[in-house]
Length: 332
Ligand SMILES: [Zn+2]
Image (tube, rainbow, N blue to C red; front, side):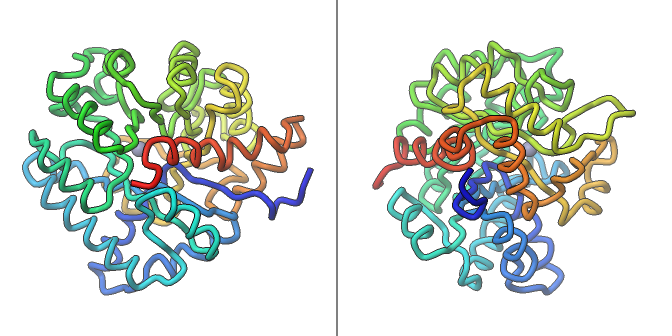
């Protein structure tokens, strides 16, 4: 195995914008530099998808306003943060790595921020969004989220138009948090590779398990499944650890192939107290040994110990996402 330092990591889902907007409201500045840079560097993170996620109490009526506040605060903080770079295309992706900056792909998690209007979708693309997750857990005008697994009504006509428009705009579609019927409806219409940024497999009963059929469908579509590092087991008595995390990765590799697996840890160590008050019904279980970005290189060590080749690990940690980013966005 090559040294850990030769690996670059892409995090498919890091909720930094919410942390930034909340801290800036309290007067902090350079939140990315002061609160996040050190852990990201220690973890060899070179690129991450940072989604605009709107708290439930703003939905649906004030989702757009809140989404704009979050996006603006985040971009202001980026302007003040010399070690970070917003990336809009593949050239920017490469340049950020060459200049040893952390490349930020602006994302969305929850389509409520565009209301019922494709013009707003086009606005967010112009603003810099390059990855769009239609759902969080609720039902919205596009489809159903994970709260509706039992009564999932599927992709709506507006949702279908959103998928079509995202593909036309060359924005990566993210299906994390989408309930199964909605997921399959999207797979019927999707033309481009897509990602499911932070989920688990059926290797352990965890939060948002993807079935083997879903994993194979994402592989057939050319996409990537990012493996989540919080709440990866549901059983109350089991404390998840790095072994369980790597079990999910190994299983996803077995079913989908190493070309279709990535890392979507969804760390939120930095605002767990806020989140407990926002989502009191949710149980938050961190993975022992993988509590924040700084620990990510331990995943490489463990996957290597389990016999995955350096090439496979490079695909999972970095190259799969770069492939999709280049294919969908390229030089646009
Ligand atoms: Zn999420």
